[in-house]
Amino acid sequence: MKAKVITNDLSFLLGFRLGGIDGLILENEEEISYNFKDFTKEKDLALIIFSKYCYEKIKDEVENYRVENATPLVVVLD
Image 1 (cartoon, one colour):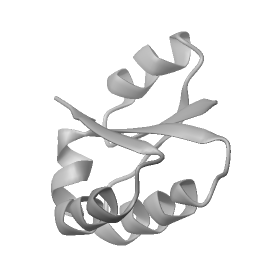
Image 2: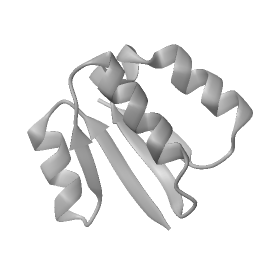
Image 3: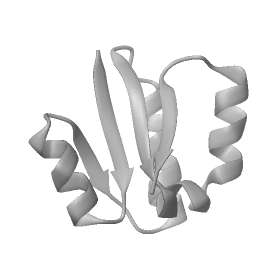
Image 4: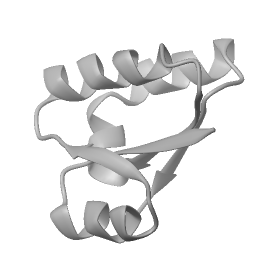
């Protein structure tokens, strides 16, 4: 199983890349939403990690997804 990161902070992403977790640096709501939807379609993805900034941009969409789906697990880190 894999994990992916969605963030706006290079340092945040680099920390995860050192641990073997890939991800994207995104700024605007449309990019974040598009990539979140794309990640949720990956069958072998177990975890999506959001930075707080990116989560806040699409909070309602993420919460609706969490209610209806068990996997991948979505977590938010500061």
